[in-house]
Image 1 (cartoon, rainbow, N blue to C red):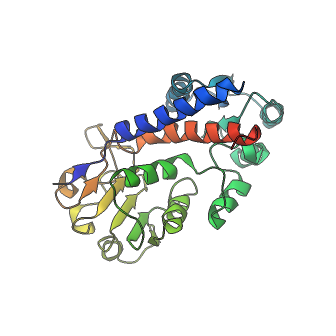
Image 2: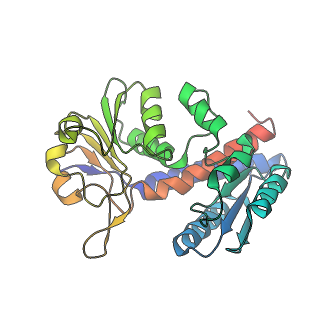
Image 3: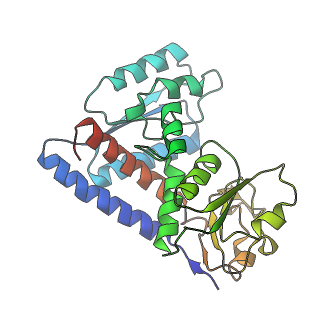
Length: 284
């Protein structure tokens, strides 16, 4: 049976590391600050924002939440982002997605100063990731790499397959694996004979948002399996994109859902905010 990769434990290590560095920064009068913008009353977004506030408190950051009404206009949202760009005590700006339908998320992301874009969604940061010369990594793919490193498995020379091609996970995930010398294949809904591709993978990352989609016959014996999915099964229970029960006996390492990739995302956001504060204050 596979070893379970404990996302909570790895996440805790990241936060402890960030908290220690923050103590050192504060000795020089620098406190990392995160501004979180949320528009409307989406319940899932409210939970995510609360968790981000708690994480900031835990690692010693300054944080501000801007809870805007559903009726907020594009102009009002843009103006807030511009104001936060100019505030030196704010190291990172995060706009919680999805936004209400009348607002353009691309316009908002493009207005966030790249050096304060701690989600790493701005085209400048996306391009930097592509060429391997970046300040920030998107939080979920960065968290996945931390989990892979925690296994002790060397990515170099491994065949890695990513299921999913989203801008938030799939594409940057492939780039990070490539930067660590994996041979990478991105698969998606139009991939011919998906099973033939995934069953060759030494490292398999599932990020498609389909409950229990990846079954044992799609997995290579001894593979490292990372499940980015967060779905509900037929009984309303949280589950991932991987059919955990059937796959766990075939792979060498596997992330559970919940408790795998999920805890890592906010911890990597804290890492990015710390990095932003250091860059903005010329701290090496």
